[in-house]
Length: 161
Image (cartoon, rainbow, N blue to C red; front, side, top):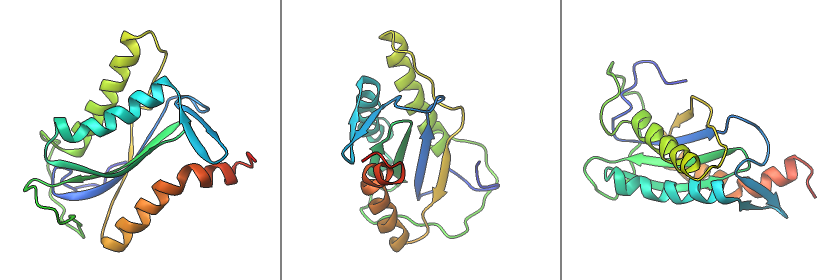
């Protein structure tokens, strides 16, 4: 799943997809092209907003909760400047370090799962997550549009009208 040799703690912007263990309306449902999150979906959405509080070297550019997955466009920015970071080929063999993408996503997934356990809500994530390293501003803009339109496009693709 991860790009071999990539340092996932390096400054870059990542398009992340996290899937639930089961398929279906686990986090809510799409009605008339709009996502209506259930309690678990609302918590998943709320906790995305808190990622930057717990990892102050991050910025969420966009996110969406879908019925059985979550998309997050997350930037790791160690210096706190406002210019988005893009990476072309900065490979460096390293293990996950504090503030690395796998640590951030695992903490997020764990927080949602702990909330569900504490509130007797049956829920599981898939063990892994998918990521794509954003290479330039055009790809960043296209990914933001994709995320924003995802519920509407999902509605059309699955003939839910």
